[in-house]
Amino acid sequence: MKNPPFNYHRPASVDEALALLTEHGDEAKVLAGGQSLLPIMALRLGRPEHVIDIGAIDELKSISVGGGITIGAMVRHAEAEKSAEVAEQTPLITAALPYVGHRAIRNRGTVVGSIAHADGAAEMPAVCLAIGATMHIASSTQTRQVAAADFFQGFFTTSIEANELLTAVHFPAQSTSAGSTVVEISRRHSDYAMCGLACMIDAPDGTIVSAALSFFGVASAAVRATEAEAALVGKAPNNETFAAAATIVSNTLAPDDDIHATAAYRRHIAGVLTRRGLAEATSQIGIRA
Image (cartoon, rainbow, N blue to C red; front, side):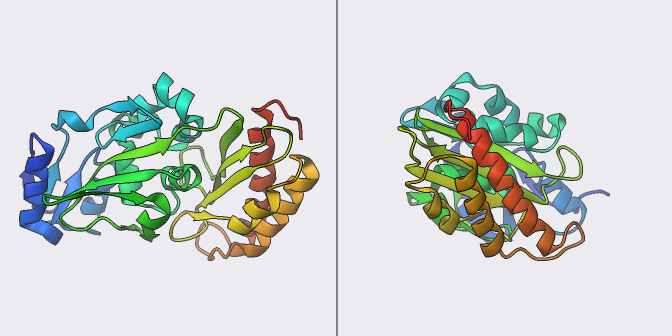
C-alpha cells in the first residue's frame, strides 16, 4: 500500500529540525529509521501533513561514554548491538537488541526511535525502565531531561510535546557486581513478545541489594514489578527466592486478553520468565541459583 501524500523535510541540524517542529506542531512527525512510522502511514493509521527526516543530522549519530552510555537519536539498532562500549557499560542493551525485529529492521531502525515509539510490546522501553534511563528532549526554547519512569505514559504515548525532539537517551552504567538479561516468549523469533522481561539483579556479597523486573507485552506500556523487586532485596539469590518473586509477579500483573494470548497465559508466562531471567542474570555474576 502506498503512503498518503505528505510534505517532506530533511533538516541538516537539530536547530533546523526544531524550527520545523515549532512551525508545524501536531501536523508533523519525525522520521528516523522509518521502521514504525512508514508502516503506520501505509496502513492509514497515521497521516501527518509533514514528515521531518532527521537522517542527515550528524550530531545525532554518536554513541558516547560517560557515566554510562548516551545513544543519539540516529544510532541504528545494529550499530548499538555491535558496540563494545555498549556491551561493557550497559550489557542489558546488548542482550535486548537481538530480539528487536529482524536483522534488516535493525540495520535501518534506531534505538531512540523505538523508545520514542513507545510500543508496550517492544524491548527497548522496558530496558529503559529497568536501567533507569534518562531522556534528553529539546525544543526551540529549552532542553530538558526526563526519567524513563515519567516518560512512558501509555499506548504509543510519551511526554514528548509536538514541538519537541528526543535527541538522545542516557543509560547509566551497570554495576560490576550486577547481572542482567532479556527473556521473552513469542510465536517466532523477532515477533512481538506475548510476554517479555528485562531483568537486572545485584548481589555483591551473596545477598540481593537491588533488582529490576521490567515487563513488556503485558500492558499498554512497559511496567516494573515493584512488589516482586522489593521482595527480592535482602534475600539470597536462589531458586526459592526466585520462585517467591515469580508468584508475586503472576499474582500482581494485570494483562488483558487479546488475539495473541489470554491474560491468564501471560500471567503464567510472566512468572516463568521471572524465574528464568533471575537465574540467567545471577549466573553472570558467578552465583548458581
